[in-house]
Image (cartoon, rainbow, N blue to C red; front, side, top):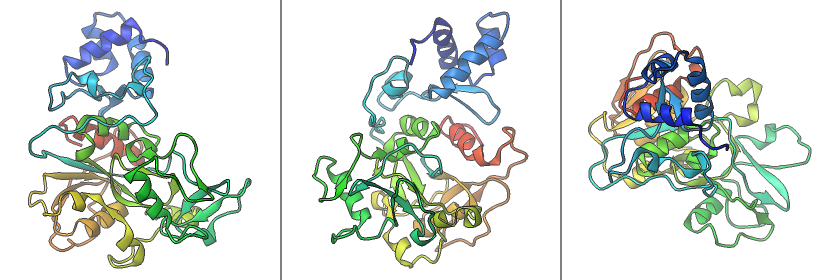
Length: 344
């Protein structure tokens, strides 16, 4: 990444001392004659993960809130996304400070991913919902479900993921290997920068991701790349990737990770403690997994058409037309607003 420009430094200083602003507002605040250079510079920083845009398309430095330890905003930004940064591939998100949990945010996973996966006898392992429906690929890959047994071994792929997270340096079984970079932590697995922004603003202890392949995981839990979704739209176009939710007691649902309830076994009584931004099917699965825990669901369109599950309190935030023009990206704008104390 090229060195940060003087204009970028001035823009960051302006945003750190103000509120979310448009390019025109920033240009006016910096006494610049035209907003175009500001917009171009902000767009570059957004692409590099330094800024984000809220639902009203205004720019925000995503590390704006100071950490509980009193660190400066830029201290929460991973060095790999700062100009000139050279941090490792998987920097650990800032940890929350002592004191009560003020908010937990849950996001659904994303189709676009950038992380690696296991190799079996040199072939890439591609995790899907139904290997029998997967298309042939060149070079050939090994299609598998997360809970399939590794060929020739008495351990599942999920079991290998657990072992990897216990100690990434432990040797893998014969015939199984990983690329040099290893597995990505969940916040770093998905292509959109909002996942990194949430992890580094809230801290890993306050951020969970609902993965259609692996379950409800901590944002710093390492996962292999996968192609599995709860979205009904994939059923016809990509049938091997679609995972029906099913009942709470089907085998896949029983084996899913549920890190939030592991970390907090006593249900939260206040629905404002946990906020989730996701689509209807993901909201249904989250409701199954959290049981009596209350939460607020931020959902595009009408409320999810499901009844409460074991006392689960549904909170719904109604929305008009999305200003960004793309309902699929609304979840990211909503998460960006939530971590900065704004409404969706």
